[in-house]
Length: 241
Image (cartoon, rainbow, N blue to C red; front, side):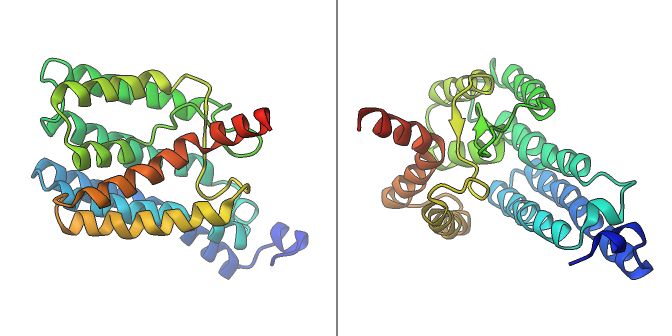
C-alpha cells in the first residue's frame, strides 16, 4: 500500500500502473460497442454476454484502483467520471436500444419509452443523492441492462412489457431503497451467494438463448426480488418486532 509520501511523489511505474486502471475501465466502453453491434444484428444473447463482460470490468476496476491509490497517483484523471461515462453506455444506452428495437414493447410506445429511459437515467446518474449513506440506491438505479434481461427472459405480451418499462421509468425518482449487491454490508454473505447463483443461471440462460424452464425463471426472479425488496422487508420486520 502506498504511503502518503508515495502518493505525492509516485514513481513512473506507479503512474503507469495507475493509468492502466483507467484504460481498463475505458475498455468497458469498447465492450459496449461490441454489445451494440450484436444488438443491431438482433443477436440478443450475444449482446448480453458482452454486457456481462462489461459488468465484470465494472466490478473489479474499483478495488484495483483503490489498491493502487489511483485517485492520488493520477489526480488529473477522474476515475469517477470515467466510470459514469462507461456505466451509462453499458447500463443504459445499449440496453435501451435493445428494449426499443426488439419488438418487446408496443410499437407506438417503444420510441417514447426509449427516450424516457435515456433522459431519466442521465438525470439519475447526475443526482448526488443516488446512494444512501449505507450504499443502498435511492429509486430504481437505472439498471436497464438487468431490466432488458428480464424482459427477454419473461417475454411478456407487449402491453405488459410496456407497462413494466413505464413503471421503472417512474420508479427512478421514487425514493425507495434498492440493495447494492456489493457495497451494502448487511447480509452481504447472503447477497453475494445469491449473486453467484444468479450469474450461473444467467450464463446458462444466455447459452440456451433464453429458452429455459420455469424453475430457472422463478429462481432468477426471486433473486431480483431480493435485490429490490429486501430492505423494505427487513424494515417492516423490525417495525413489527
